[in-house]
Length: 125
Image (cartoon, rainbow, N blue to C red; front, side, top):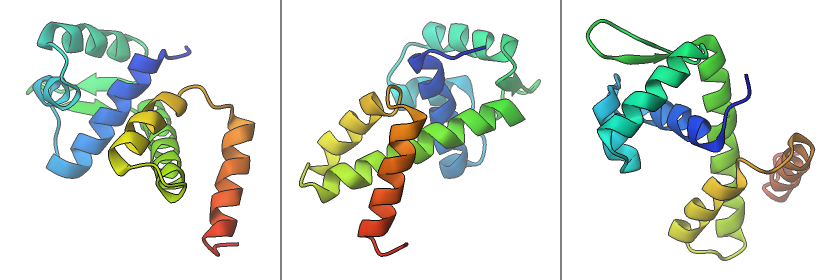
């Protein structure tokens, strides 16, 4: 099942929050994304049904293997695009905001080419 941009954003938020806090609940996602609790609850239900997350009895959200894969891909895109835009002279805040928009629409081919270019510019081969 293909995810919409919002689904990808939720998965990325769970990944980032897990790295920051260790465990994640719906309220953490709501606060992180500045969304209402009912909106996040509905999204978590959809992501559970689609097999991207599980919810533990204590309310903790866990990424499934599929959810982890999607979250890691989006997070990699976000970080690389932010880094590249900052390198071009865009302020960090605007770069992060724009990266969030671009990360969902850029094709895999274009992203791979951009990734190679950024690595070459950084002397990473």
